[in-house]
Image (cartoon, rainbow, N blue to C red; front, top):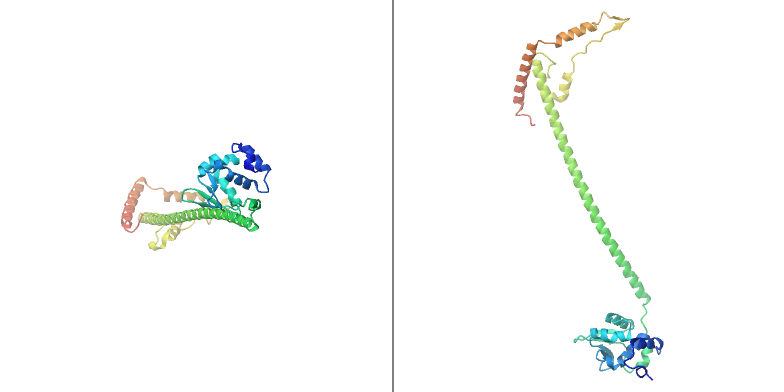
Length: 286
């Protein structure tokens, strides 16, 4: 008695599944279910043999999934059904009317006694090595992309630091230029003040030329002679040096001026500074 006689078409999906799990008849369970499915006339509108009996034809994948697969399998996913066919060596071909054909060199109508020879494909060593190589290549690709991203970030950071360095150098050069201009102007103003003081008879003499720069001005600004120090021996002043009282009186007479003389000197200094500033205005850049 064949399976179609032992089980009616109205059998429950669980009973049909149990039958093929227990009685594989030497064929894999999936192949046995596929064979019984093709013998079931109630599902022939959805799946059947081709006219020549060498191919399986699925006429409507959506209807086949909802009305047939759930009766023979624990799912109704057509993609999983096709994946199983591929694992057992079936080849898919699409037709113009939307149907799908699946062919196998052994699975043909009339060759039921050979169905037991159909086995699930086992990946060969080369296939496994190829899969491992592909996985490694994908990992390396991701790693290279990360390195490139980090390289771009480092380049951007280096460029930013270079721009900041150039800005700092430019600011330093500008500060140096301003400092030199200020020093030159201070030297010129010192020269003007010295000339003004010399013209009214006070202060050291100015240098003979303006080419001496700041060093010559500073040299001339030093006292012309150091005052003698008081020499004390045995509590008495030496006869060779003037006493401190004499020096103090002399300094007071030299430094203290009449108020009218001070006003006159201030007016004279102001007038000289104005004249000197106007004469240097055309040669000095502020």
